[in-house]
Length: 305
Image 1 (cartoon, one colour):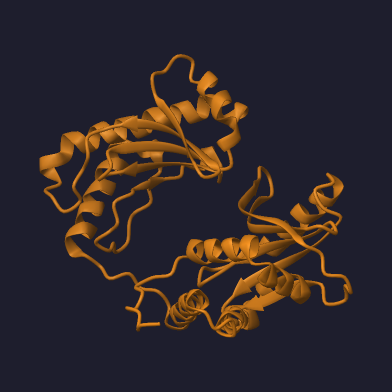
Image 2 (tube, one colour):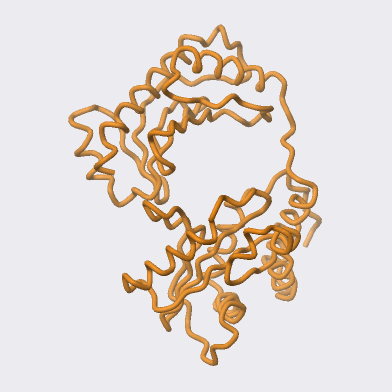
């Protein structure tokens, strides 16, 4: 395998999808994972599937859920370097127990997957039933001796190194200043959107994100500047798209799906984060007007979604 260029950043979603694919298509890997979490089980059941970003409306999100033919499930939390949320492991346990009550599985374990420096030193990590390090995963792929597995081991090594050094985005002064000007007008003219003051921004940052407290954790509003969209994103609602369209009450807006999420979309003029802020003030105001409208729609629909 030829030498790879260094990756600038490995997101947790990159590792999520790497694991998701491997579990679903590689029976050797899913069996190895089962053995790590259930060493006392003598049988080796087949894996019946793995799912990403499984959301419970009250108890939050499981990064990956894996199920086996014997009724066993593994609920996986993946961390590269993000801090643990309060009581995160306990909520995994509650979701697992509710899955048993509903007949989704017969037994379960909670599992955290992260660099060894994280799983051995983070206090919250100790509250999971099983802890698997990226180094263990890297060793497994390295032993496969294929180009594909070598690449996966390389991705994991980059994530391990990223955890070691901590990820620091390379600031772009012009983009950072554009965001600050954007925040200033949003904060003054549209305080209900509750936009957080931005920190330093790299060159590729162009999705201002609004998360008003009244909307809850599964709903947010995003201005996708270069694409010319303002989206009200509802995570875990892909199966409710027709219900959401009905609740629009005749509003002529697009409703689209992306993975397990649904978005109500307003098309606006694109905004260039490298351009003049004052020269695009009108376009930005129209986008913020759209965000405020979507906030009202979200409040009107809140009980139904």
